[in-house]
Each structure stands twice: as structure tokens, then as C-alpha cells.
Image (cartoon, rainbow, N blue to C red):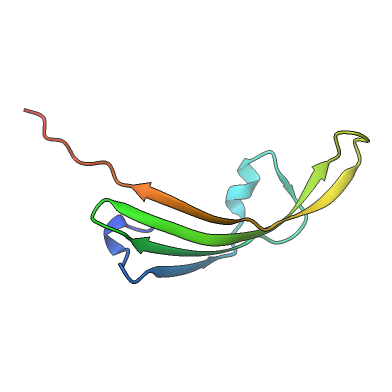
Length: 90
């Protein structure tokens, strides 16, 4: 999913993501569906706040006994995204 920077509202845009195809590009093994809820809020002309929750069941390996175990990853997060200023070259 792509969202144009200029389409993000100061009131916030809410998204629910259930597509987990991006997770196949990592070394993580999942054992439950991935579900994310995001709110993108424009803070000014160059900054956007991304706030949300991620729910994913991961299959990890214990360092001590090397057995697989289920790990329910449910981290809340806040990320600030800054658009780079466009510079004129003279």
C-alpha cells in the first residue's frame, strides 16, 4: 500500500492492513495472521506521525534449548516521517 504524502489529513487517515506479503521478505517465521492498524496524521508540511498497533504471531527459536516457541508480537508504535525538503540547484 502506498499513500501520497499530500493525501494525509491533519485529522488523520486510518488504515487496517491484513496483507502480510511484506513479511515473507524477512527472516521471521509467522504462525498467525498479521494485522496492523495505523493512523497517519499530518503534523505540518513536512512531517507525518504514524501511530498504530501491530499484531503478529511469530515462531522463534529458544537460545538455550533450540526449541521453537510461539511469540505473540503486539507492539504499539509511533513513528515520525519527515519529507525531505526539495533543494534548488543553481
